[in-house]
Image (tube, rainbow, N blue to C red; front, side, top):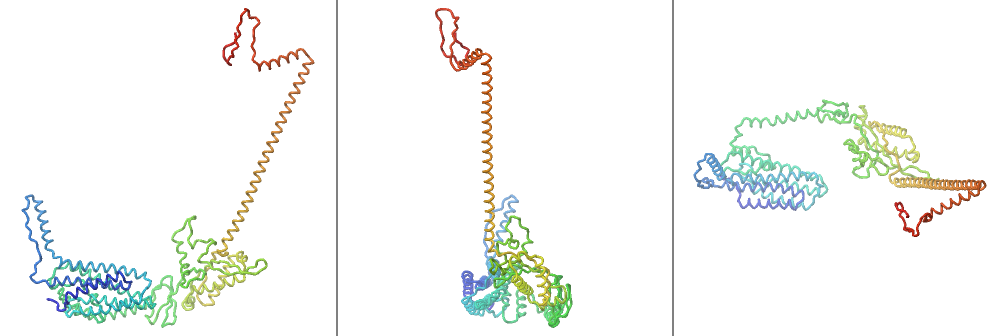
Length: 625
């Protein structure tokens, strides 16, 4: 039967087109709030388009027959396998031609594509919400709040008089709610209330639930038995969106829809009647059990708990499960047990305390893995004082130079290791006597350091015994904590470094470099002097040795001449003629060795003789005739 609440087709088409246009403009030009509303408009347009197709199917006459195609097939071949294959192919072709694409598949495809796209966009907006900077503007709020008026008119136009399930007004309910909520969030965000951006989270959750319901209803419709054309309903019109109203949901409408759609009559079901009657007692019993369960508390192994009876502190209980009076008759306040903290004594320069937050987690990177000796160290492991470190604080100390009084700066990297004492009195004092123990320790330690450096000099601080300073500082700090009744036990004071500021590192390095250069030049001069002295000594020794050798040779030649002269003198005395003849022969031999001589034998006979005066090559076998 035709629904009397159906609106004109042109009106549904007009609203669907406006929804699609507004969703596209919202995603293309709008900010985050407008994009959230655009997702709801996309879901509304999906429902309207789905309803238009289903309405066309619903208006088909009762005598409507699916279109078919008359086919004339040739005779099957004689081969049995080929004939069987052709028979299967013809059957598949017949079934494919019998599919009603508009009535059975087109509405589902429209609903599935639109809901899947909306769910994907919703997921992206949820991720964007986490990183949103809270930017909002008054024009955006004005546009969204102004859009609630036409959305409200559309919702009232589509209200159905007869309920067979979700009506067309559900397509505008979610968009109306999103426009109202995001408009208010943008308005308050522009006024400085940045936390109102989280108003978009429930809207996105409802939009995601609607998209999932549309996809589930579409898949269920595909796998359900076909129904008559007049009973077809749009799967994109969801119950989740239809429940967004200011009145209590009516169960009779849901029962009427189940009876009409699936033949389930809940009015005759004793299970449903019993569930309705038992809802209130069961909810009340669960509430009482939950209230009584608030009187059971579990304390972890690293905690203690103070049981407060109507706000007054009572006993202190340790780890385990404990039973006490339920809330608000009794509550517990948890206190640490044995948890050791390390606090750097440094004061943040930023208003938000970002430096202190970084120092609190500075040592966690050391446990991830060790670095090599040649690698650049991480900031927590860099202990060289030529650069500033986040855990250091600068203090002024007295100085005396050249008979004049002045000030110097020293950097101190000091950390306090503390915990809440293990006694019950310390637990009570920690819970009620100190609101922020870290701030209290930091203030007291800073005051003690200022007092210590006010009466010390740089040389005294650098030469002071480190262990004596640590013991005295821990004792004084523990005395202050006891005086404040903070319940804190100072376990140790760790002094990482005490040195001049990093700004003096460059001058110190220059002094060191100058000293090294001076030593290098001095050693080079000494090496050059030793080398020159060695060369001169070697040359002098060579000259002396050469002179001695020359003198020895001259002396030996003189001695030889003297001996030769003496021998010749004695020979002259002994035999003058023989000595003279021998001397003549000796000189003749020497002279003949240097001259070319032709010897003619006087015994040659004959009147004619031939002398061959040609030169004879040395070593030849020829001679003179």
